Image 1 (tube, rainbow, N blue to C red):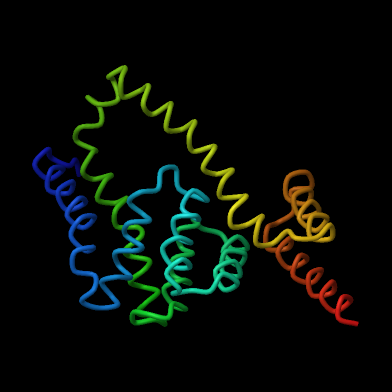
Image 2: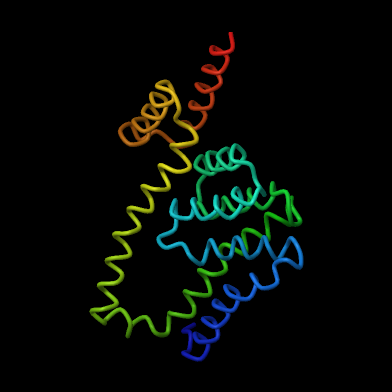
Length: 208
């Protein structure tokens, strides 16, 4: 069913209202702060995927809601299963130290991170044909797409590289995983399991 311009305007107003109002009242309780953190991450990301990683880390790790090791462990697990990286929010919502936590926290975080994209899609749909034909809009999209490449590189370096690669053996393990994925096309789940086994073996060898 097509979305009318009036409905599109309502969706856009709802998008910006949910982006601007929760910070004013998030001190009223944990659930509001949790919703605001994940909604803002979902609203400000462009391109999806790993671009959301630094936003989520800033939203939950920098505030002390989730520890850095727990964040990276959940990120690794999210890479081993199919589906968009946004579903990583469910794990964070379940393990956070504030808010409802558990299944309710996972549901709240999951809805909050997907909601802005849905509202923005429905809101811009009636105006998209007219917008995309404008040279200025096309140039802006090309520039944003190019910038996303830099954001992806930054997300790979911080927090993934800086938190996980400290020794030559760490680099060798990361390189092996890259070759398995990019060259041999190994399933991500297999690579994650092999990486976990190798990391455990390295830790045991270092402690002996």
